[in-house]
Amino acid sequence: MQHIYKRCIMENQNLTPEKSFEIINQVINEAKTRFEENGFIYAFWGLLGTVAALGQFILLKNGYYNINYYPYFVMPLGAIYTGYYYYKKERSRQNQISRMVSFSWAAVVLNIFIIGFLLVGILKQNTIPIILILVGIGTIVSAGAIKNKLTLYSGVVINLAGLACFGLKWIYQPLLLGIVFAVAILIPGIILMVQHKRRQNV
Amino acid sequence: MFKDLDPLLHSQLRLAIISFLVSNGKSDFGELKKLTSATSGNISVQLKKLEEAGYIILRKGFLNNYQHTSVEITKTGINAFEKYVEAIKQYLHPGLE
Image 1 (tube, chains in turn green, purple):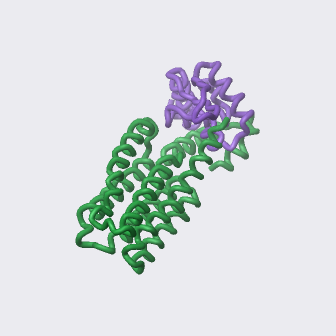
Image 2 (tube, helix red, strand yellow):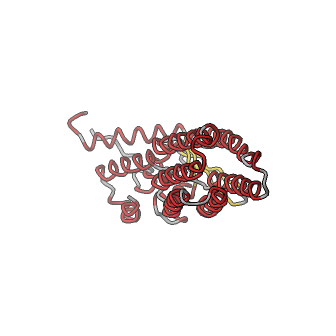
Image 3 (cartoon, chains in turn purple, blue):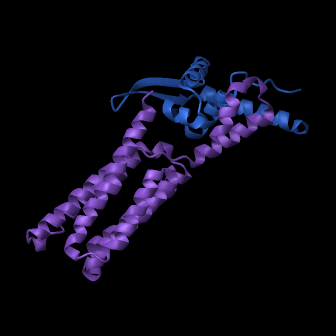
């Protein structure tokens, strides 16, 4: 769509009613499907996930088996903050794409909480791989919405890490989870934040 | 008889900006620049014209330590856009009037 503007911007004197109608339609359709992510929530969850997973790994490595899952109690607090953040910041700018992404992540996070807190006794060493696969799918959906290749690659890496995690010894699974959160969520989130700030720096 | 087309909106860049603002309510300079692929200078000039006509409100400030210009459409701007669309429809379908 952008090439149309590039071609037409300098030709204002030749604007026909048909061309006007075409521009209005294109821009309104673009507005309906536009979704921009400022990266903050990715960086926030990247940091939260890295700290919680590495915290679990350190506890397990030092023999604190009975409290190894305690670091994950920051996650529900993070989910509440995220809901509040989007309610305050994005409510006025919602469109069908942002709603689709919000619903996808709500479903992913809800399933992660059910798996991580309620089904962990049944799933045992399969818990972290399944969580990684769910996060990977959510990230790939977001990548499609914001049309960002870095996020897409991150989603694929998370998804593949989830599959590889099935073959990893259980004590090292939180270590992999922490590394994946740092490399595929925290760092891309910071890059998205920097890119977003640069775009607004006008 | 054909209605006059608002000369302020009968410009590709200004029309694109107003159409986007009608859909979104508000935006910012960076988003409009990305949307239209126009130069910063060109967008500044067109936004100034729309602001002088009372179609939009520009607010300059700082966001995360960076200079930030937010753009918001006014009621006058929405009315002007609606009139423009009505006039365009008349040109496209002259038999309907």
